[in-house]
Each structure stands twice: as C-alpha cells, then as structure tokens.
Length: 311
Image 1: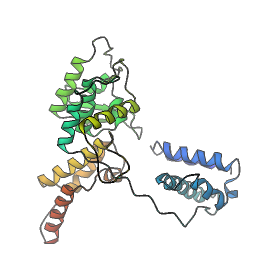
Image 2: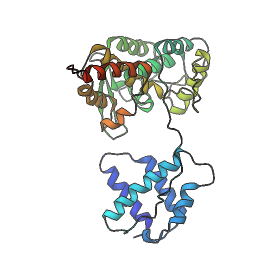
Image 3: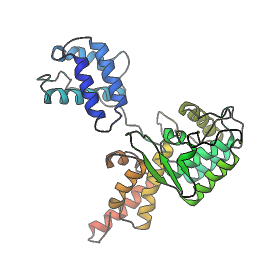
Image 4: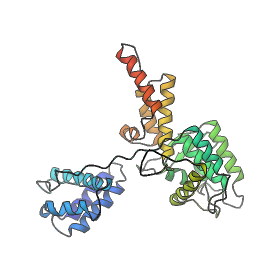
C-alpha cells in the first residue's frame, strides 16, 4: 500500500471517531510529500529521521510529528499494511512543556480597564471588553466566542449555543446573571445598522464583520501592554488570550476546593462544560498554581490522616 493511501485511511478512521485531527493530518500529509509516492513498507528509518529533524533545532513540533507517525504506524501494523515500524527509538530531549498563564483577578480588571484607555483600529472598546469577559466568564475557546451568532446568545434562558466545536459537536453553555447583563448591554449598544438575524455575527469589528482570531489576538497584545500584564518566569511566551480558558478551569477547581466540594465528581462536569470529549483534555487546563497546590495538599493531608474527604 502507498504511504498516501495509508495516511488517508488513518485520517478517515480518526475523524470518524469525532476528532478533527487537523494538526496531525497536516503533519502526516507533509510526511507523504517528503517521502514521495512509495509503498509504506519501503520507508527506511533514515528518511523518517530526516523528516523529523527538518532543518532547524529540535522543538516541541518534532515530538508532535513523531506522535502523529506513531499513531499511523500502530494503525498500519494492526491492519497489516506493514509489519515493522521505522520510527526512531533514541529520541532527543523534549523541550520544556508550555506553561499556561493564570490571570489574577487584578490582572483581569486591568485588562478590562485597558479597553477604554486607547482606541483600537479594528475593535471598539465595547467589543474588546465583552470578548474578554465572555472568555473569562465561560472558558469557551476563542474561535467559539468569535463564532457566536445572534441566535446563539439566549439572554432569556441565560444560555450560549456553541455550534460545531473542535469535536464536531454542539453544546449549551449556561452563563451567570452578571455575564448575561454584559451580553445584553452589548446587544443593545451594537450598531443598529447591522443585521440582527439569527445567523448574523454577535461580536463584530468596527467594520461590522465577524472578528478573526488573528485580529482578536493582535488587539489583546496591545491591551496586555497597556495593562502591564507580563510574565517574568522565563517562559518563552507572554500571556495569551487563550490563557483565559486555562484561568477559567483553574479558578473553578480552586473554588470547589474552597467549598469542600467533591472535586473528582465535578471534573467530568467541567469537561462537558468546556467541550472536551475526555477528561484528560480538561486536566491539561488545570495548572498547579500555588493556591491550587495548597488546597490539594490540605485535602490530601486530611485523607492521609484518616479523614473522610472527597479529594
């Protein structure tokens, strides 16, 4: 079987399980172009290593490519497309894992204040403020927030309808009364000349069109500088707009610990709320902040001492 045929079959198999599999599919198609139109059992380890190494230093993407190839070869061996794997067994050290930034309440307030401190060419202050509070208050993905239509925002029921998410599913996201008021204010002050049909974009730019993710992230970088929100832990990346999602998940966990809630029982509910298929996806968002570590340690100490604790 040709390598391109094996890759196509593997991608279809993964996507049939409800996975977008976009990043992995891109890496595997790149592998096909690099290897050429040959049978999968003709690929030698040297060519695989050349593909993985590329022309630059080893980055996290080296390991992402390897992970995609491992999945492909497990799939191919199980279906007897090939009998052995040419993947390397000696691996370079994996770069330090990315550490998300968890915003403090004060930093969120400063970011909100920064929306009115300067004019943005593409976003109004109202749109900037509403987007930030929407992300902070719900933990939805940036693309999900920007993809909301007017008909997806049910202010009366206090629900957001998130359509065609990362895993091709639609889910309902309950929102609190404070965020409902914020969204209602935005809806009432939105440019009256814009369409209000159910399929019209809810959040819009100054030009009246749906914002792009790149545009939103560009504006956020400006807000971050104005608000002087920076990380000083030596990490490669400064705080990102996507870190609002990490902040939401971590804040939920801290609140549950404070309330003495059964965290293990609630985690699957958080996973569903965030739109994750598996709880493992949610666990990646739970950064071990000092406060979270403190609460977890106290909970474990109670358990170790024979207490009846939920932790």
